[in-house]
Image 1: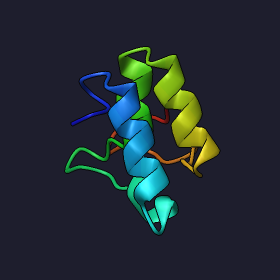
Image 2: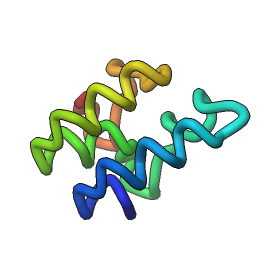
Image 3: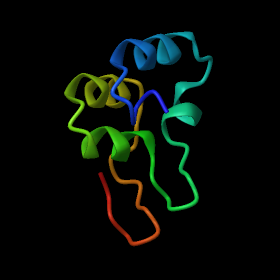
Image 4: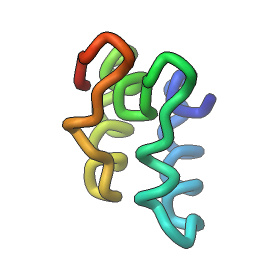
Amino acid sequence: HAVSKGCSQNVSILLQSAKNTNDLVNVQNHEGLSALMFAVKERGLNIIQDLVDHGADVNIKDVNGNTA
């Protein structure tokens, strides 16, 4: 939710407080969309950088085979 709303400060706080950020940043919804995909869609450059810095997988595919 914080990613899709562009709340970069909230995303940063969540990532810093998470024990295992790899599990958090690579979770996908029912359409296969990850937090990184939402951030790219919203052009949230700060959020994109935070997610990648915390291990977001840029090669995760959604149900249509698309990546971020």
